[in-house]
Image 1 (spheres, rainbow, N blue to C red):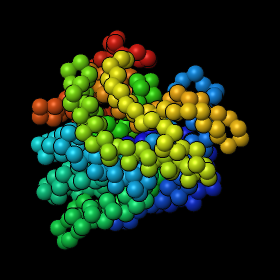
Image 2 (cartoon, one colour):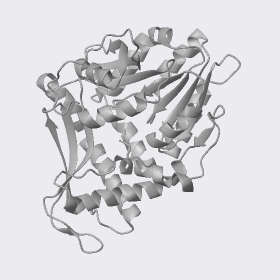
Image 3 (cartoon, rainbow, N blue to C red):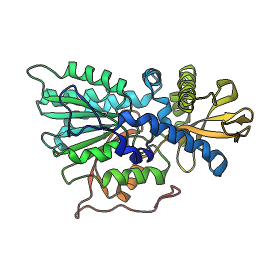
Image 4 (tube, helix red, strand yellow):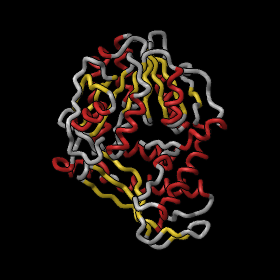
Length: 372
């Protein structure tokens, strides 16, 4: 799912957002989602400015990929047999939900960061229902349509006289979520499924984790799903996850290019002018990288040129093993309470809380470049 950036905070005074802390069962609160078009325009323009101003490869905003049509394509991609992360997380919830619930405080509010398709998480919610443990589930996402569909489906599964799980949506970005969650007074369980929260280069991922750690209270928990497959052992498995449905991925990116054109108001990204490419890196950590490359010089509005051969990153997937995730948590002031590993897989889920005075600190050196 997409990485979130900062500019939307600047638009907050012009955004009409919900004042309530939590939605009613089946309700979706606008916590900034109605302002996103302006945010995405700014992000895209910053990317295009960086083409000529930066020595680094610019990054296209991931949010361009996740409009209503893009989410439909994405849900098809994550359902293919080779996309192991989806199937591993479902298997982990089916095997371990009862144990997870033993660590969770009563009347917890779950906030699912970048929820997308909620099919996976409903395997966890089913455990709350089976054990008759009251809880609230809030899906945080940038797509209103996705939230409408997901929450309607969850409400259908969690209604009736015996239901104990309330479900609602928060429409907005991670930044909007960070600004909103202080209103929630109950114990909170933050869910980061599908390698969402740590899916960045080490320094960026650590910075994101530190920001969420700074919001945690003593009775809060963070639940992180993270892919730990590495090139050295699983090159083919990783590659197949992203290349067993190349036609779907191409539709996914072409849809994103079309969304960029709509935001700009002119056709800068013509499919025939761009190669959609991928590679698998091993250093400093395993990263599957999708990127686009200009086939020819492309003139932008105003006369600036995107030179032939210019690359722009789009949709990176970083992989971190157990040692790296535990180190990242330690450097963010967090302690890993429990780790669960998927059967025959290196996908793991981590239950994390704030570090306490009695916790040992494993803050040893790492071979990961950029650790700080």
